[in-house]
Image (cartoon, rainbow, N blue to C red):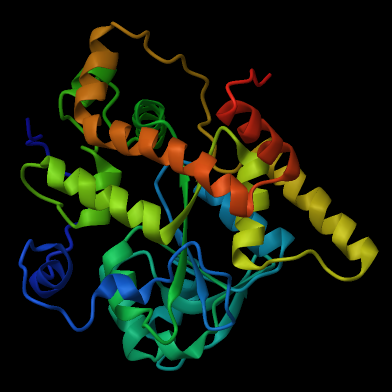
Amino acid sequence: KGDSGTGRSASISDSDTERSIYTNSSQPRRDSILDHFADSIMEFQPTYTPFFFHVPRSGGQTIKDIVGLCLNKVQASEVGVRDGHNTDTQLQTVEFDNVRYVNVDTTSKEGIERAAMMGFANSQMAEMVTSSYFLNAARYLFSEERPGRAFILLRHPVERAISMFHYQKSTGELPEAVTLEDFARGNGIENNWMTRFLTNAMEGELKKSHLDQAKKIISKKFLVGFLDDPKESTFRLMKYMGWRYDDDETKALMQQDCVYRKLNEGSNRNPVEYELPKKGSQAHALISWQTQYDLKLYEFARQLFDIQTKQFGTKERKKEVKKKLKGGKVA
């Protein structure tokens, strides 16, 4: 059955974009926007720009801190338009809290279009672009000649929803009286966030075809990582993006220490401790229903993670996967 809930985040309503990618039309298309992202199996090229598809409450801030603070990469996110830089008419690099940013906002539809008008797509000023607007980024920030190189960090959808609930309670976005069950019934929960944002189905009923499309996008265009496997995921991200530690041994050790510290500490964690609802409880059942397609996409990504081990995984993980394939037990 389809799922009639809607995503709560701002809608991407560009019908032309929807038609050019997601219609079932058999008409030939000269230029698919998905071609504005490089295939994940390709070796990294200088014309590629790393793109981090940010799933909220899934370790995104930790990744951004690692890239900006530890690896000293220039980023494009929402930070670059602080202190009045949203009115700049020319692209430039600005610095906030010891991290460098391009003066654009790639986390909103309007910001992405502004960046495009300023010539961001051909500038290659950013060494990582962060956004939850996959299709808008594809259309306005990248091209076949200068494609994006996509990465996603995933968290179990039920755990992510519960984290969002407690985070919104802590910030006051959700009233104190709202219970987890109320939230899961539709009072604040995001319905199948990943599937909707990847396929642009922001409103109305989801169908199996949306899930199938999301799987195709993930498998062809993304390196996947997991919040509960942070060191392995970060190793793969660096290899996938062609990032290396500094040639100077002392600086390289400092960078490695910074990365491990960020992975161990985490960033933007919930300020309060909480317990997950037990399987079989009403709250767990309601959240599982609200995230039914994302759960299937998550399990698909788990399988893809194993497949991508051969090309991007650590030596240790490659050995584990080989044992798994042979039917051996992995500790």
